[in-house]
Length: 334
Image (cartoon, rainbow, N blue to C red; front, side, top):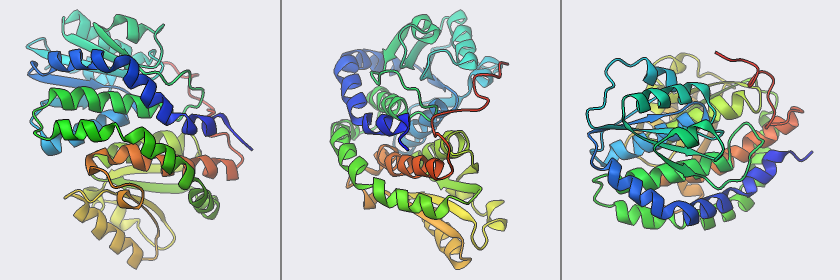
């Protein structure tokens, strides 16, 4: 059976191209303003929070940009936040995420410089921020966030790397322009192998997902919004460096563990964890950047997201679940 998420995966390169075409100049203006701030808060939830983890970890590997990541309520209740040359980027695919909107309103009350990145221009978050980027992913029904996720992540990388002091940012931003074409190829070539992997794993009920650097954000998304919300599987995301704290006692024969590897310096630990898990005959699934593209490893989440999306899409399908539907999200308000 074909679900809406299938088309959403296919449309990701187009979403990036359309967003860049429409918002590139605006992103440059925002970058100039952010570059003059002492601290930038990145605020979001769910898939949006995962994009913030990825860009934060990427920047902290190569630049001195002073950034913090938090959820909307964490931002709201943080007593240290004032307007001493601070700014905030508030991310929400719908533009109506309650806790993110609460955080944005606090930032506006403090007269901070606020930016929103959202996919809906008639939303409160889009209209209440001082500057707003509209991702051109068209409306996305699927709860997982595919084309909205990837175009949001692309916007964050564009804005924040331009605002940073990373000496190779121009090269990175130039290489980013190749991502849509790379994605089109990977979308076609990675579907079947991950469909087969999903069929092998369809009866598993829990998946651990590990990543290092920018790939932790992708591991977080894979666990939180793909495995749990989409495939209705128990899942837990971890930084690779935390493997030996907790998970090492649960990594045993036939336990499914997803590893994301992009050959970051910190992936030395990822490789040791893979070796250890293989020695225990765990069901290790390794998604390695070099198997899909020859690209700057800071851009790994853009590439590895695709095979993971196919895997979760078919994992859901083999269990008779629509990966874009929900049971409780939207019913709970707090």
